[in-house]
Length: 167
Image (tube, rainbow, N blue to C red):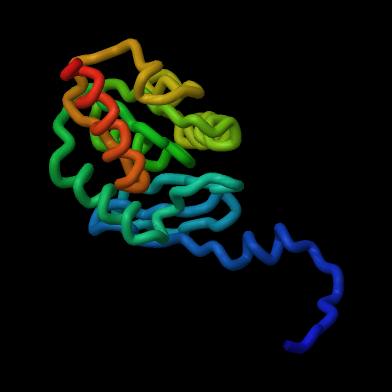
């Protein structure tokens, strides 16, 4: 291997310069707050500053989830977003006419990031954000449950619940 010394620079600025707005679905354009979108051509614009959380619209699973939300979300749906990350799915659900969303994550960085993104997108009155897991969610009767997380986590939860309910 070779060792190369890289001059010190503003790494955050370099990272910010690499994030571009993306047309995540036919209708949804996702952009960081530091990039202007001159003409969104009638697209639904979601502003996401990812910081240390997952969910910018660049990853395939996020785009898949946004496509599913776009296709199946109904006006006045009550939504649960488990593992919310940046809050992108919760924000999209609300902007596509869901009436309320509970956004939950077990990571403090993600919760802080989601709260910031909720405010930037002017949906703070309809998205409740809190630190926790699916076990800490008090509400029920959701019309849609969103979970863009590793399948092993979902399967672990399902297995644990099935085993404990059969005792």
